[in-house]
Image 1 (cartoon, helix red, strand yellow):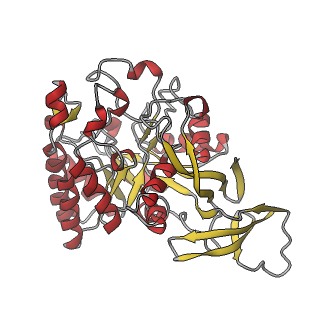
Image 2 (cartoon, rainbow, N blue to C red):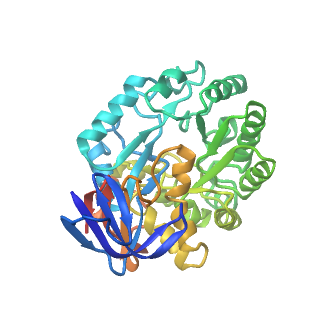
Image 3 (tube, rainbow, N blue to C red):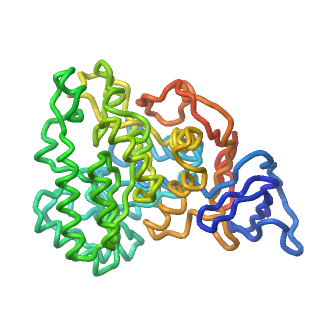
Length: 424
């Protein structure tokens, strides 16, 4: 099918293109930007006047709950939520059940995704067998089936020698390692940032050092092994400074942050608001502002949703026992555009953190609107206000502190490989 997106503001951070133009699509690919190629006749024309036409969003960390936790979500529900939010590629951490630690599991994930026919899913393979932190996975076989990024999810590898050997093994295949910075001994049974709110509420704490100690260890091993690494969800000012220093020294390190850590702080926990219980925990205003500066300065390259849908009961327990996580894939773009409206980011930098930069980190051929590129696109109105409503959520999880918050960047259409998978 031939498709023309007509008269939109085409904004492609990868090429720097930013201007009003038509986008023409044939057979899954962009064939022209501007004038149609000779002989091109559109079977369908979509009016994008007054809208931004951007590359499809790439969410570097979102849990789809299938397989293993099908009662809280499924491929169909969570990927439908993704495309409603403009997300065309979703990276799934390896902590499914069973974990993604074999080629068979990676292929099974892809088969279920193909059956859903919505967003593309990029399975992240496990560093260690069953995520137990003891035996290394067969990284060569995983690489052969297209797993170019490895992680141990949120499960810490306590043995530093195992981490070093995992980095060395991964480097032989030129793989990227996605890291969660949390020292398990310092995290302990903590559930809130070690700060003013923890003192008021009397809750067990997670100190900043839980993150910085882990970052320091991993940076030392990255320097000695040469592995390409990405810290997925930083939360503290000190960790941002450590990564910035490593980048200045030429280490192959990138970093990401969740959308909610760019907006919320420990103060939002209020009186035991379990909707604000996340890992890593929400930290101080100074930490939040440092994350924002790191994103604007390019130290932090990506924003993810860290989407985790939970059943209603999971957030009704006392704060220390309640489940961690936010169902955030539908609000990812809206929260990011709010940063633009608040003057924290320009629109190109904001979109780069959701498109071009994640694609570069993952090493995939997505995240751009260019002739010959696969036509994954998000069409949205940057000025249209909207709010998350519990009754309007597509995800099975309504566990978000952003219900009824005014957001901007209403998605009007999402295309995957040149086909509409969502229209408002």
